Length: 334
Image 1 (cartoon, rainbow, N blue to C red):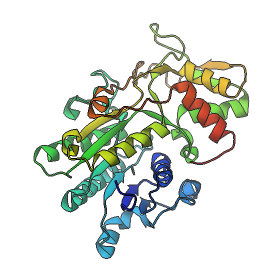
Image 2 (image 1 turned 180 degrees about the horizontal axis):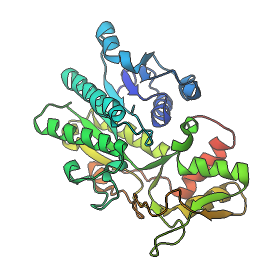
Image 3 (image 1 turned 60 degrees about the vertical axis):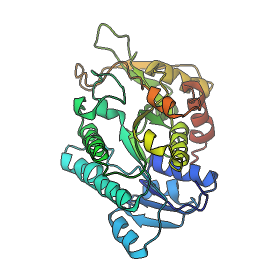
Image 4 (image 1 turned 45 degrees about the vertical axis):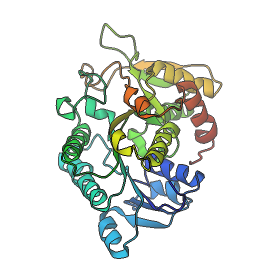
């Protein structure tokens, strides 16, 4: 897409949204309208040095677009309520479902390509696997966050079947994303950041004991994907959307490496990146026996590959080493 294109990025003060904005800057895109709730000062460093053309509060977006009548060329809708500890489902419904519907309808009316953030949380405990060809109505997410993401996926597919959709759209099911600009997330930050912080504070990483006789201590497998790969997929879709075949690749896509790794391996990689001896302490889970996760999470990325995405993903070793040595040790932002 032309470098003069006007691109909207919602959730631009957050983790993935701010990394995408930085990535677009590096590719020569500066006509970027960033959208978010900008009241959280802990997120300011995520966006305050980005090259943009406007900053718009999330609640004012559609009025702002109507008032200024700027021609938008592409929308990345990455804004969401991601705090999985929020007990009130209506909070998720308002932002992750209803607000997303407004974004979709605007893109449909104005014929704007759309990429939005879904989640691997839609797969629940993974009893039906992690196949992005699986219909959302067959999935059983266990968290309110996962339910809200799955509800929007269902709605989007229904709209697409009725041709009430943008000329191009993609819903991306992000797996365990880690990388720079997640400093503000606290308990919701990736296991990589939280483990790094434990090493700095205590010299060790705490992982959970297994209460399942079929699994060793924290031998859970997760699909850890470096945020640079996530935004690279987003950028690839930006380019694909201008292709005549864009209509054919619209749909839901897993975004993970397709190579699951254990949390033990993740911890060992952090120590290696710091050139320190591995020290892991296995502790009891806060609620042992409450097994609301799968012990083997692997993104099936066949669909993404068949759509034409060819780049290799960072290995856990390369991604964690890059994150630790080039960002965490220096407290740098992307």
